Length: 219
Image (cartoon, rainbow, N blue to C red; front, side):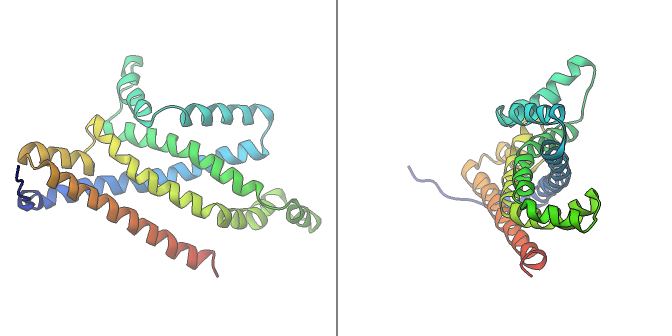
């Protein structure tokens, strides 16, 4: 059976694809920022907090990391209305992604914080620095340098994982591609283009993270 590739109908919807791409980028960037700070807060609680704080963070991490992201999204979007709280698709997706990324980034950040030699912390204490000053000047920068490769990889995986939000009708890149496919019936062409866009985004983000590393940490 012969199959003739026809990308014309797919490229004709380029404005629609750009709208979906914009949603994917906004969702990814917002999740990265909020998820990082959530992970930082949880990592500090697990590293420096009391026993109850550490136990609470451990329960959070194990719960999120051992359940599918799609289930977490469905729980917020379809489950919360049963309790009287209804979220828009984008809001539910963002919250679920932030919670998910926060759990994974917590362990990455915690490992970076614990990688700082105790001798450096003791040296800061000997100089009379406050705990906040020690955290800011002695711990944060070396820890960020140590965790940066793993954290940037996690951010890229997060960007790729945003495609699952199409299941709750968020108009992201994958959802837009599905709509174009249903109109054109060019399955192979549509998903080839969508896959190529995600691949380009992953390489672009990797390049951006590499430039940031060279500018901030490699000097």
